[in-house]
Length: 329
Ligand code: AVJ
Image (cartoon, rainbow, N blue to C red; front, side, top):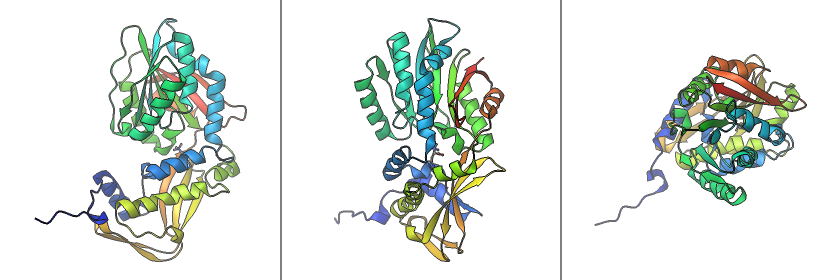
């Protein structure tokens, strides 16, 4: 018998990736979903972005949490002063900023169950090890899954109150109707008195926004183009990343930052695993991401329409980012 030899083009193709890429590259205008950014290399690039001088989002949100974590946790437990919080987090990733909230929770109730939800099992393991080492009293119960397709949390026990974290402006990747639908799904998992802490980026001057998504060191450009490198590997495609330019644009009418990959010349790309060829005109773009920016009060309004009651919101001195607490009634 001849042993089966698997070549790179014969290796297993992720059907979820294949479907999304085929649909996106056959659409007009062309697009790719932003979750494709986060392979191992893309996740590392995003971590570097969070430390860039131009990328104000992460450090601004962290400063808000550093200043107000105790009040947020206290208010999430109210009105019953002795309710124990049980904390879940959607798209936890490295859970770096979350540690501020977990420390505040442990200070209040000495032990806390933390249930991070993320598609990346690797990110969850790293976060779990770090948190259990650094914050005694936190019991980490990771859930590796794609929360956008719906998710189920165990109901909180007697005397417990759930707090769901959805921070980091992750909701900004969703169209307003999708964002509202996701919040309603979260609401459906909660009992009256449970809370949701939502982090959203706010509208600000265009120059600041553009710099945050087109940094001088080119890390965001590399993050954007990494999607093409991923398709070369996962779908046997032949993209030349140098033949595409990174473009960040502020879409004022729709209140969102957009990222595009713009074809520098007419070209034809083959995606072997999809048995697909795609033509690009010079200047034609692939729209890879939207990052919605909210007006003051916008997130609160969206939360109210999803069945929550606003229970507090905190911002930074410049009013660049907002963290909102909402309660299920
Ligand atoms: C992880 C979705 C919050 O939209 O700012 C960073 C991703 N894109 N630089 C964002 C991202 C370009 C980021 N989120």
